[in-house]
Image (tube, rainbow, N blue to C red; front, side):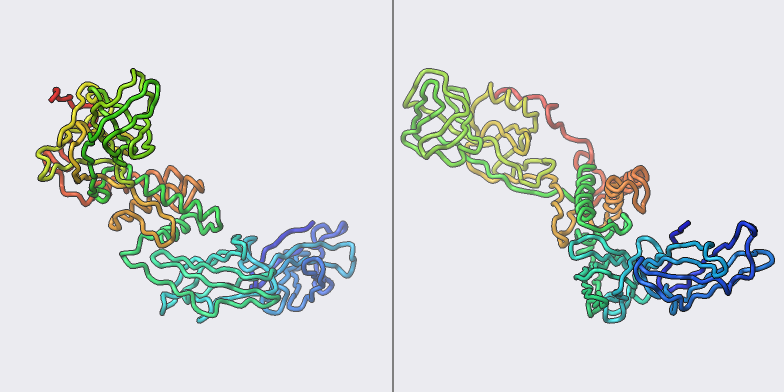
Length: 500
């Protein structure tokens, strides 16, 4: 019968064997001098049993029970590797048994083994803040191909190790500690020699202005997933952090995300005359030049009906979205206008349009279907629009503005996607707690459980933190008629005005 026993490198091995025979099933006492431990390493190399002693535990109360002690520095446990040990009884060699001793860096299957070893020391791999050692830093070591190799923790002196290697190559070290920028180094292995970075792993404390970089948030997330490293883990960390930001942004109209912008509304165009050809989408302009904006959602108003422009072929030719179905006409007047404008790329929720000095009133928001219905029955232009609707990522106005003018708007922006480690999260640093709880939840979804608990635990903690964050939004206290007071009518619950 063979057993696997894991032993930490450089620690004393204590093992027990039981010697029994058919004639003495209760145990054979007094045989310590006749027992020999035969050792081989990795099934090929004979190993000396120097530093190994065998003694009987108690010949009276425990006859046949023998204790094997292996010295931590002079016996085989002073070197990592897999050792097969066979206890042989000189009196009767038929009574023999074998065990496998696996000596690793930490005494567990996750530990490393090899002929080359490295232990961090001051000036060579020690973790510091630039001056003083840092304890509890997570040390991740990956192979030259990026595969996880080992995970360790720095002690109060900032040192860690040993790590053992069997394969030559360059191994990368990553040091992580919450509140600090990570540090990196390398270990170069050649034969039985492992050469460290040759300097301390210096980690800079994260300043308040950069405490929410992708790197620092990944450091936090990696602690939650118990040091899981590798390409797949890093990808899930980044996606989880971005999803956490999205979850928060969608949960409330945060004052943090409120911003202002500017839209440029274009004046109408009516120079020259048009030719429409039956069953043809081509419209030709004589005596004018189509403005470039006509191809970005422009429309042509003719005899009270508007026609949507698909493309601008040239300065004198455009193509309609649908062929002209009536008879051919030429030399007719028209009005071209643009009443659909793209919102800012980062617009998540539209706020308001502000009139300013040149617009004596602000337009009313209505639903898109209501606006289209009103357009079909009231086709005209005016200096200032009276209605607007948000459709997809555009604002649609009516009446179409007849003059070119810049109009200020407000909106809630969406958080920027984090891609590079130096990217800073678009979120209130005073509300870091809710972001951490959101990260916990996203990590739990991806890894089933994290240090913070199960998916259910993390979700409940996130919702609790979210509620506290809502109560501490930077916006002023509730005010009558503004802010988070009674809302104005929006989207489809406005009564359409009578024709102007």
